[in-house]
Length: 110
Length: 122
Image (cartoon, rainbow over all chains, first blue to last red):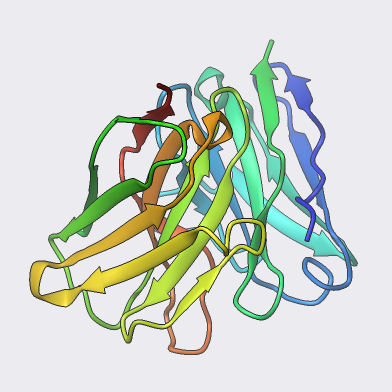
């Protein structure tokens, strides 16, 4: 299995919305709704932000939302804030007990 | 609230075995799935493998020949052993818990330890 494909970087200004894509195959993203997203600030552990494609854990802002179309999942952050600047990783179940991460996307808030 | 804490040697010599333990506190250890993930400096996340509360394991294929994940329910701990390490195994190692609201569906990793940097060097 190969890692899921994410853009290396995205950027946006405060208040804007951005979307990060996560492209897999029909064996992982396209075949299961077990896609999750993680936020990681420098030197910190990843934080669980979205799961089940578009569900949010308790305490996560509703500015974060997920979606999926075919083999591509997406994370949208609306109303960008400075604190959203971080790396974001997607993760998908790939069958047979295996899980794949994306390569990560660095979000810069301009 | 469940909390996870990694422990173990921070420096391992090439060809030796990396050993880490994750201690689980503040919640139930049973009926959960536990995982190890690593992140080389400046790079992305890689899920090494996971273990169920019954002891069933699954490892990522690229590491399967060198990895063992085990469970000690009496101590609320699970462990990672990675043998024959090289410099390429230098990384921050995280332990984490899967979010599995039902026994048949897990959705991702909801609780993470703080991570521990393990360096492979002579």
